[in-house]
Length: 321
Ligand code: SAH
Image (tube, rainbow, N blue to C red):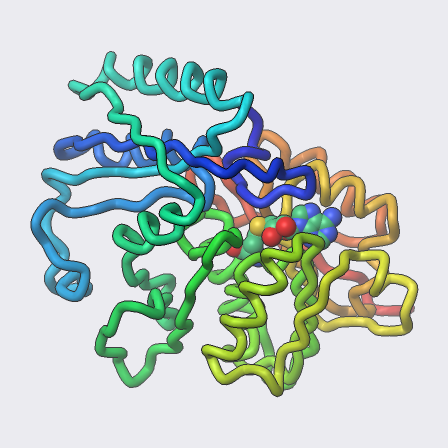
């Protein structure tokens, strides 16, 4: 399986009506490794449930030791499902050489139930020192210095649990300057656009070529009182590169092959001279190829952040001579 499936909403996404839930209850050290493996195959990352501990108690101070937890992921029940399951089982089999591994439990979930099933297991998440991602249906006390993003990702990608989303959030936190003009290309749930706005951007243009994502992003933007700072549009690079708009920061958490293709469509030009591009959806093994493409579109990669198999590449457009 390629990173396409792992990374969720894809332009050629089939309209599958059923999902397969994969659940593994694991102990101790195996939990993180299991989550890592499922992350590669699941749509929207994984959900981790700590046995018997309600979500609202899961704040920093009370995090239980990772002894007994259930890791869940969802895959589309389509013609590729048997192959995905086989690959997942092979990866888990490999892990069983190192840890005692239970066999995965599968359950078919109808599309209508999928969002609900996901909701039961999607928990508040703290990223970096400042960002708190809160599912809209969970109440949690926010520390005064925390920036909260309330999310209902619905069927759109971008819950904050995927390493690439977390890497992009960290990079945004490090780089957004007050008053910045930001372009979020492939906004999914809108999570990065909302974070950018809350981190001080003056305006964010958020586009996605998946209507489901556009709808989810619009709802989440409204939910976060960010309507005056974020414009959500159906579209892609083409609708912007042809206009005169140039941005201080571009963030594109899509897929290596999509970013490489966009580099051939003058992706670098949407960033103002001296501005910054943050690129993810990229596996560590693909980073060299993506950096070569970024150079070809006039950008200078200068930093990588890595989480597990995933990387965000930070690149600058040279200031005009
Ligand atoms: N920004 C979110 C979502 C990333 S998933 C996050 O970081 O979590 C990638 C998103 O890009 C999906 O919503 C997908 O629909 C969108 N996408 C994929 N190819 C695209 C393209 N060519 N143009 C615009 N959006 C695209």
